[in-house]
Length: 113
Image 1: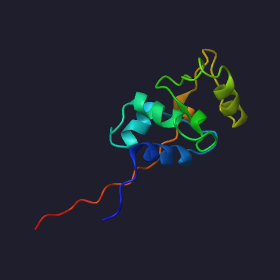
Image 2: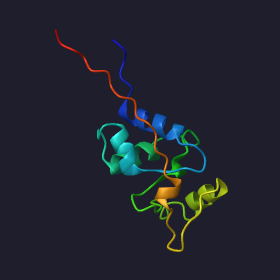
Image 3: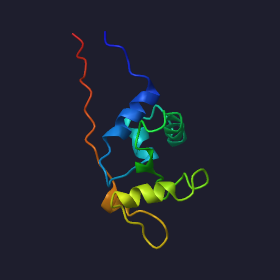
């Protein structure tokens, strides 16, 4: 039986797949891992990642805002703008335009005899 990937690593694997110039929300990541972590837990998974190991800056809040401004003012915005992401006058990202919508793999159903 294959060993299960730890939940924080599952989050980090998804985040590594986000293309340049695209973003996902914390809630979206929670859904991709079947709700096994809340959006806050997703933040902890990213916060605990080794520096430079995941493109954490591509994860935004549900309103297209940046949740890291208190910790690293301006950094996340600068990194996203360098990838071509534009912010509206309210400082938010247009999620309809920049959200990445991955296709989650469907789990194989186990059929019982």
